[in-house]
Length: 222
Length: 223
Image (cartoon, rainbow over all chains, first blue to last red; front, side):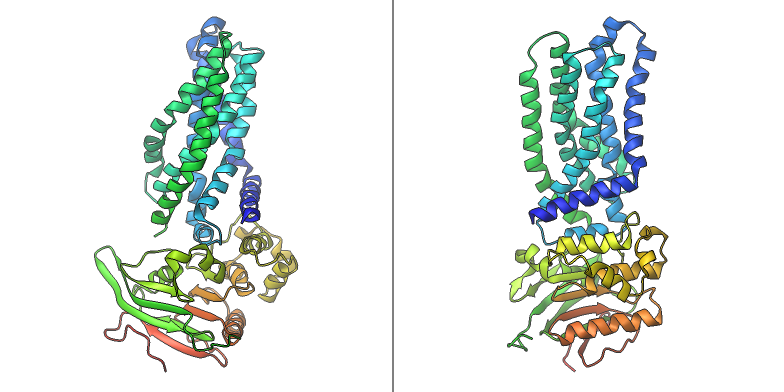
């Protein structure tokens, strides 16, 4: 059962390697959205430093949203989801593997790219590192909560918009703690508590979301 | 072969299902012992696919229950899945992966011992050349994709085979091959449930029929 869990993650990664465009377009979207703000707000470093955390986090949420609709949709369309549901492993574990793979393909790349974008906003040193850590710690919750929305909207027409409406409000706590961590680091305050809260959100989401997502999947495939 | 050859392994009791407001079928019952094959027939839209999905546990029936080895499949869940090979209306073959990767993944997930040689063997038995096995599955023809989907099921160790239109898109040679494989499975004490429009011969197999959509004949009678 545990080896099946890793086999499933391996499959997701292999599929992503074959469809590199999906991950790349996500990263390009993230970079472009974050890079647009300085053009609109103006080149004053003081202002940019103030808004950096919020901008990067909102862009990360939107980039995650973009990828969520594909989480189950491809497998649903070609019938592979039926086979996955019928695997000799608990459905919640299957969903958890999907979530972990989704994080490896979105949250992790976003966390790695974010410090480069922080440089554009005049951040240096510790805040850059904290930005990366905060996204790495908070994005598992985004993937997990997003999986509930992706399962609920599976097979619906216009599911993408509905998915955003369902999921974005649930992302608010992650946004608050995530942006708070970077803000604290920018102002030289203690940021440890924010990072711990982000990790706590992620752990709670990884435990609870697969249950809800699995229940929604059972309904969706009927 | 099982010593209790006539003990019903796979039992459906009073199944009913609806699509929207319309009742597709009701009080469908049958009991299959090891070494029996059930053919589900009926006109288009009579609920064959729905019945097979109910039997797999992909859909909940409106009424009734399905039992495997005497236990409700809703309680068994992944224990039931371990014994089950399902080939649906959709192939479930990933276009980005090669046929070999598709079959090998299914093999690894079924945890039936990862004998690496068996995935190429399964595919070449079903007529895919070594070269075709290494192409992305999306460039294969419809019939070849069907062969990949069947290769996952036909060479596994599942006891219960549930195939929805297994012969769709296959050529005559492949149909004979698949039918022979199914016959061998059933003769060896397996159970199979198929829906099909074609009248395909199965050698030396206890064959039972279930006709959906015909009034008063909803339950299968032993021939």
